[in-house]
Amino acid sequence: MRAMDVEVVKAGTQHANVIAEFNQAMALETEGKQLDWDRIHPGVNAILRDSALGFYLVALDQGEVVGCLAITYEWSDWRNGLFWWIQSVFVVPSHRAKGVFTTMYSHVKSLASSEAGVCGIRLYVEKENTTAQQTYKQLGMIETHYRIMEEEFK
Image (cartoon, rainbow, N blue to C red; front, side, top):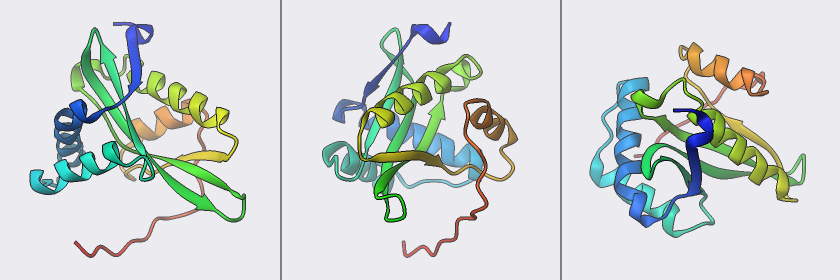
């Protein structure tokens, strides 16, 4: 499969199950976390139904969903614009290292750069995921000096 064979489209509610399954697989693979279906599935549907939260893109190879990512928004008062955050990236193992993420990222970059209010693209990556970090750097992203801090309530 060549990357140019992959079509990237905005996901719809018909993609909710596969995106939720991909999110479960990604969390288990990257963090060893088991995501509860009764939480992740409604979470995926929330974005698919409310564009104010963000949107998903899916990569299709001959109609089969082989990858996905989510875009959420962060307002930057410093830049008077929105950062698009890439989240929930997953490519099925059989399609990895074949340009699927590169194609999805190019699509995101094209969409974001055509929106007047978007000032940049960000993502976070596991510290030990050097393969993903290298891919992101090859696509032109740089490592920032920020660390992400959080406190979870659920």
